[in-house]
Image (cartoon, rainbow, N blue to C red; front, side, top):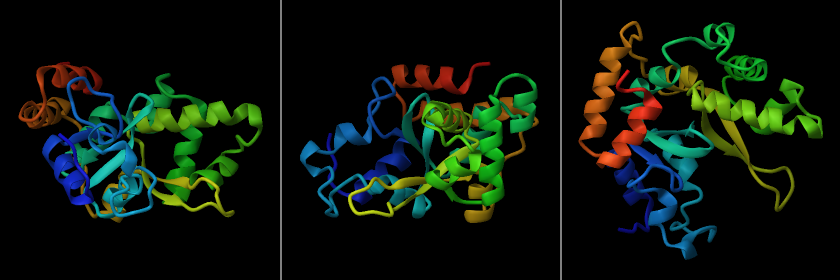
Length: 222
C-alpha cells in the first residue's frame, strides 16, 4: 500500500485512529512507510512533510510524541478518550506530587498552559533552560509531557532567517480540545469505561500485534 495525496493520508488516520509518523507500532502502517521517498521535502502538494501540521490545523487529528520518542497522529474523535488514559486520569500537579513527573516538565506545562499557544524557541527561553548543557533537559521534558498527552503539537513557526528550521508550536491538550476545537474531555472518574471504548475502537482496525502494543502503552487491560 502507498499513498501520494493529503486526502488519502486523512482517510487513513480516520481508518486506523492511531497513525504513526514513522515506523513505531508493529504490523501497523505509518506515514513515512506509505509515501514514496522521492516525494519528501519537494515543496509540492505531494510533499507529506507539511501534512503533519496541516492535519492538526484542519482539526482531523492530534499530533505529538504520545508513545516514546516518535510522533503519532490520533484521530480527533478518539483523542479525547486517549488523553485521560495517557494522563492516568490525574493532573500534572498530582503526577508531580506522586513522583511521576519531573520538575522541568511540570514547569514547562504551566508555561504552555498560561500561554495558550507557544513556539518551542520562546518556550525554551521562558523555561530558563537556555544553556547548551540544558537542552537535553528541555527536550526530555517536552517528550515527557507529550507521552502523558499533557501537550500537543499544533503548528510550526517559521525560522527568523532563511534556511533555518521551523519551530514546533505547542498547546496544552485541554486548551487545544476545549478552547481551540470546542470539544469536551470525557469524565475520568471511571477510566475502565474509557478503556473499554478505546479498546473496542482499536480492536476493529488493529492487527493482533498492533493491538498488543497499544494495549500495553495505553494500559487497556489494567
